[in-house]
Image (cartoon, rainbow, N blue to C red):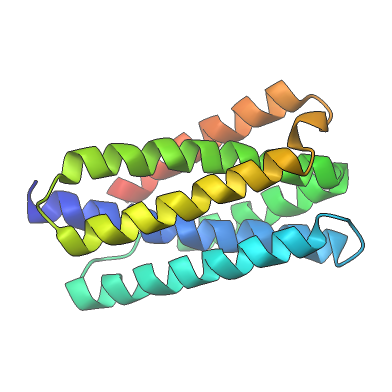
Length: 171
């Protein structure tokens, strides 16, 4: 794997973690601490913030150009979080389940592509993938599948996540 491919990984992963912080910000802005899932969302938001901070540092350390789409991901992430929270707490959890399912797939593919060419990046991705899996499992346990139109919501969000990954790697 060449340097340009590794830089694209860092760029897209930083953008994704940034987007996750914005989704949780939107959900918390709507739900506050009133929903039973609020404490879980706050916990996940704090982990995503730590993930984002680590990738922010890697962007600087490695001299990687961040995505130019940050303003778009900021607005879109917040809007997605707020919209799913407005539907209800289970829809907010469905959003998490969908995104984390896709990120698990994405991080696993990255680890396969990376092999042993960049042990530091591989260790970060592996750790964060495990955290994202825990978020997905927590969202499912908190009622994600009880959200209105769950299959449609779940697959639409995953599709949007895939598109954001592809765009952030290039732009």
